[in-house]
Picture (cartoon, rainbow, N blue to C red):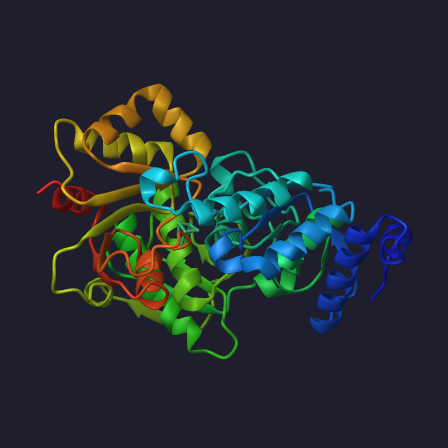
Length: 398
Ligand code: F3S
């Protein structure tokens, strides 16, 4: 791989131990994937923040990078942590976990990583522009950045994203390259869709089709005249979860779609397939004992809608509203938080129902998120009930 003088100096240790280790990680990755060069990135987003996933080994790696002089060279934000940093007690998080999670956040902060603790960095100030190269690692956000914003990123692991943050570079392969962004499989969506719930189901249907193909073709969708930011956020989370997709194009909706012809191979998605996916996302016969909205993290518009739905009503179950801290602060200012908390729901800022250490605490999750259903079953061993945003609120307050 061709390295610039600055990159070579970093590799030789002239910019400190952390930059050297970072450059070793990136050079090794570049070699594995056949990259010819390392390209500058303008933004980084790091996943793998929960102490539940990192453990002591992960924390030791972060501390070592911070001790080795690691400092971010571009705007870098964090994925959700394992707890609400300010209000973890109310969510039943143990003091031991809170202590360890705080050590993780401190290690990142020492390196200049902004502890947004959100999977929707594009809602809280980390907003790459069209065509910019970035290094993000949260799968739903990677898909959103590539598809909706037209930025360019592979799905980085936590260490490689940190390495990009500390050097400002990423290996030029995969979705950084024009040829890897060309759609290869056409999906015509016959089903009329609306709401995060139906877009989540569409992501499961298409994701499962492309996941079966060895080449994981970039999908090109037609038949969707419009989609809101929230619907696209839900679709991104779902198609990334069920299909490993990092990029899609929707004719007339996403910015790169007009660059390409409709691929020759075509599959039609019917209403029946969407309904089947919705059915499959529920596997519980019993009542939910845990309810969560906010996977991916809720936008301020979704919180406003939630507050409107909850006026004068009372929640009867453990109900988490997961969002980024700055969005929660806007909700505080607008009075939405007061309405939502008076109804008995709890804000879980900085975290989510998947990365928080809640295995064994609940049996059945009710949610509007196809991604949350996947991880609730696989990781936390919960049963799931999949409903629309409004139905979730209705069932929570019944
Ligand atoms: Fe975000 Fe957690 Fe869902 S990180 S996309 S809310 S699993």
